[in-house]
Amino acid sequence: MNILFEPVMALPAGDFDMFKACNDAPRNWTYKQQFYTVKNQMLLAYAAPAGFDKQIIKQSCWTCNGTGWYTSDSRCRSCYGDGVYQIRTYWLKRFVLNGELFHRPVEAAEVDGRIMNVINGLVHHDTPSVEPNFAYAHILKKYSPMEFPDFLREFRRRFDKADMKRWGEISAAINRKGGGIMDALQEWYGVKFDDLPF
Ligand SMILES: [Zn+2]
Image (cartoon, rainbow, N blue to C red):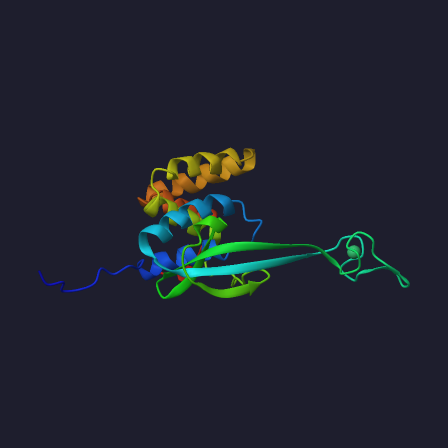
């Protein structure tokens, strides 16, 4: 039997931009850990594995602020003068999705392929191109729909009285226009139509 074409392992461009917005969200973003779960599932389903990277993170000594000196003429005793608190090594599995590289942390025992790069320090991320909360809602609803009701429940759990009133007004107005939950979330997070990748 002839294979006429290779299966295309890619997300639609708009969804990919939403995925990237979540991935580029700052480390302290509310849904960062939850997104990682979805991200890993999506990488396994849609991305091509591409070896491994080794990441080395050097933490400076807190006592001497990384200088190695406690005073101008005595060496720091916490780090024995090298200014380093600890050096940690992480293993990252590489995936190519829509032509771009993404990482998933793995245990050392899972490294069963070529080490492509050594990354010193943190991986650089761009500024998210779409408001990440809204992008996450979009990704979840489409790619992990079982989790979406939990997202909405948690979203509402954060509401205070004023939020509840505002959400009620937004939902009612969207309902009158015949829109759905994503339209309401878009309004809530202040995402303009021009900012959307689709
Ligand atoms: Zn020190």
